[in-house]
Image (cartoon, rainbow, N blue to C red; front, side, top):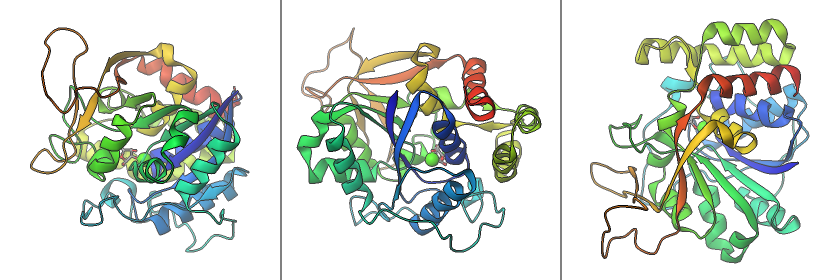
Length: 319
Ligand code: BDR
Ligand code: CA
C-alpha cells in the first residue's frame, strides 16, 4: 500500500488526480494539502472541500501557501483561462462548503504526517512546490523520513506552457521548485515532456462516464471547460491529464522512461522557471550550480494509452 500526501491546486486535472488517488486500491491517501496556483488558495481549498464532500473522500485537508516562498515575487499569470474562474470549469461550486479543515498549515501537516510514518510516505505535488519548500525550511530533518517525492512540473526537452521556457507549476514559484530539486531526497519530475503526450479525448472521458457512477459524471462536467481550452488553444481533441499522469507513475513506473541527473531551476530573467537537468554521462562541466547536487529522475518517455487505461481502471472500476 502506497501512503500518499497529495499537494494540489484544484484545478481540473488536479480533480481527476484526486479521484484517482482516492479510488486506487493500492493507495492510502493520508491527506490533501492545498496551495495557490490555478486559482488563489481560498478557491483551491474550497474546491478541495467540495470534491471531498461530493466524492466522500475521508482524507483530511490542510490549507497551504497563498503566495510564493519569496515574498517579493508576484505570480500574475492567472490560470483561470485554463481551469475557469472558479478553478473547476465554472460548474457553479457553492461559495463556501461545510467540510472540515485540519487546523495546521499545510507544511506543518506534511511534516507531522511524515514523522508519524517514517520512511513510508510519498509526497505527490502537482501545484507550486511552495508547501514542500516551506516544510523543508521549517524542518530539514524530516527530509530523510520521506519515502519519495513525485512532482508534476517542468519542461526539459520541450517548450513550457506559460512561456517558451517555463511550465506553470515551476514558473509560479521557481525558488521553491529549485529548493525541492536540490534537497537530498529522491524526486521524480513528471513534466510536459510526458504529460503533453498523455491526452484524454472527450470521447474517452464520455466512455468513462457511461461506465461509471455519478462521481465520474461530476468529473466530466467540471472537465468540459478545460477540454474546450485545449481544443481552442492547443488544437487538441482532449485534455492533457498532467496531474493524473504524475500519480500513475507511483503505481506504474514501468510505463515511463527515466533520465537521471541534477536539476536546477532558472530563477529570474527571461527564462524564469526553466528547468534544466545536467547530464550524468558525457560532457563534464566544472564549477557549475549543478555540481554536487543530488541526481533526480526526469521522465522523458511515456506509454500514454496505458497510462489512460490505468486512470480509467481506478476511477471507473476501483482497480
Ligand atoms: C500544471 O499546471 C496546472 O494548470 C495543472 O493543474 C498542472 O498541475 C500543468 O502545467
Ligand atoms: Ca495542478
